[in-house]
Image (cartoon, rainbow, N blue to C red):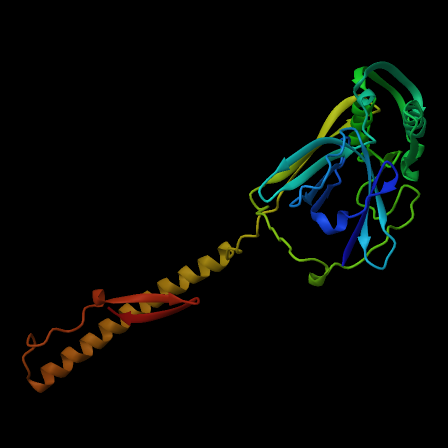
Length: 307
């Protein structure tokens, strides 16, 4: 069974579990603030509206196991509706501050990724967390012109195939999809089954509509933007028979036609001779004309057939 706990200004809120209708936590990627939405039952009208700007700390997990802290959020929107009466509280991650949007003029020269990330993290009182494989990458020169620190970090991360974000007081600059944390340690894994929740959703999209993909990268040696394009492979077409095999088949068909024609003429003459000997009327029954026959080629085998 899922379990949770909510702290307001460091103190546990009592009676929330009995009133909880829904709890939604959206963990966004990059420098987009995480969102927390809590809906509480207020049928008795006893709930007090929390002040905007209040700090909420959320812990989620499973009953009987230690809960995982998912960060601190600042209440920025409150809504009440009814009937039935319900209170909806919306909050955003406290890690994202207004000063993140301040544009700066900085010139970075002969530095490493570790030095750049650490300098920006120190400016905001954050702890830098950098993947080991990214730390020692050298940057010859980079200009931050009328650009915020977070925008500059995002641009640098895209160039290196990394991601950057702020989580729980840490400025992360890591490689995605590795299944490890910033220190290179493997992340814990667990299985989710149907009994783990009360509903599920599955979606599959048609990816065959794309004919290829194009990626851009910056060649630091020449200071030029380059691109790489890869097209989706088309299914192989059925192989055609070689020209020599086709010529042999045509030759066989022509030979069969000639033999069939000769055989029909010979048979017709034999029938005429038999009629003369028997004294029957020669024109009473027309004989088969060679034009009434055709050659059929199936599986490279010629056959003489009547129409």
